[in-house]
Length: 130
Image (cartoon, rainbow, N blue to C red):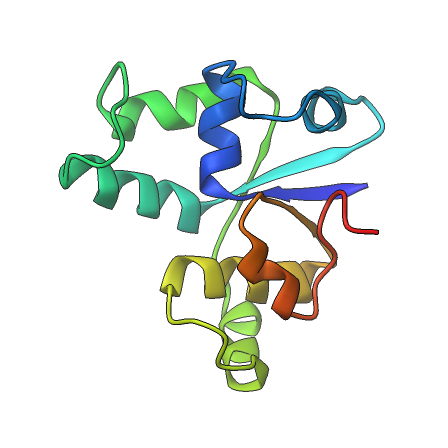
């Protein structure tokens, strides 16, 4: 499976947060899965860190890339083809970070790993969705 982590899932994973379901932790660690972290999530974490909303043990510009590499996740760049999917998305909500993750998931055939139920309104697979 090709997994795209939502920002909170990545942060929960790297901090061993108990809110991350064990099955998702196993899927992220699974050798048969490709795990991606979008630069959009890094951007979101940096913005929210600067606003005091995401406490991190070290500044995000160093900490997040190091954690991504240590956990063998692939960085997913934001490309023009992904951005063009914005025109086809339903107006479910306005969070630009979430909407870009949806666009990337569509373009790159990825399954989003998130607890945010708003993603269920978009035409993308969600880990755990039945």
